[in-house]
Length: 265
Image 1 (cartoon, rainbow, N blue to C red):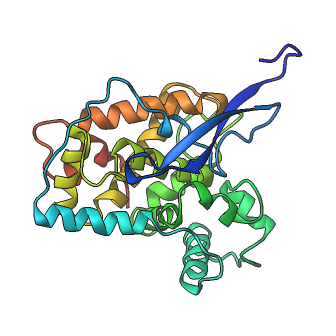
Image 2: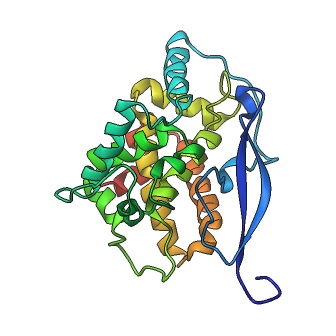
Image 3: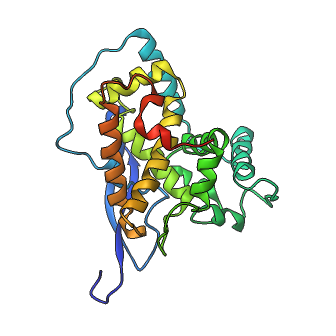
């Protein structure tokens, strides 16, 4: 709270770093009396390094290296509203979310209903790149029941001030990239190494993990009876839960994660 009784939240804007190992850097910026708490390059818990992280190097098999490079190629693609395939993906997201409701334009006030900060969703993709749109579209098409439940906030006793669905999704993409250290040439943490084994088993493991994370985040949100000012705390709790599940001995596929059971088609 500020001295006048208003609320504030720290926002961090992302800038490019010098190498794959440290692509994102952040600078604190305080926004008072506003709900502009995520999106447009904001990094929640995602970009905050943790001193306790183990930084060791893991050698990759040729197959793992190929899988990682394919995923890193996706991470490097920025959203470009001049590309037809990007436009079609954005339209696809709308009609997967709201079948039967005509989208007037790619820039429209309608997008705010999905939880974008403005009428042009492409401005919110800057923090997560094109893959953040691909993640949302994968979620909508592969687990439509869970997607719709989250989009429409149908589960649980919801807070008065809810998180905006779409922009929260961009932050989840960014958090996973940081947690798994996917910008590095090879894993530098046990979590990153474990994930590459899962990626070798399923080349869409990142997309599936995104869906799991979104559903788990919402479950944590409800359990903590959170409101929008608690988003960072919820994300930290979600990340901790994911890390605990990834190191379980019986997890050899992405579908083995206990939280995978939260997803519904």
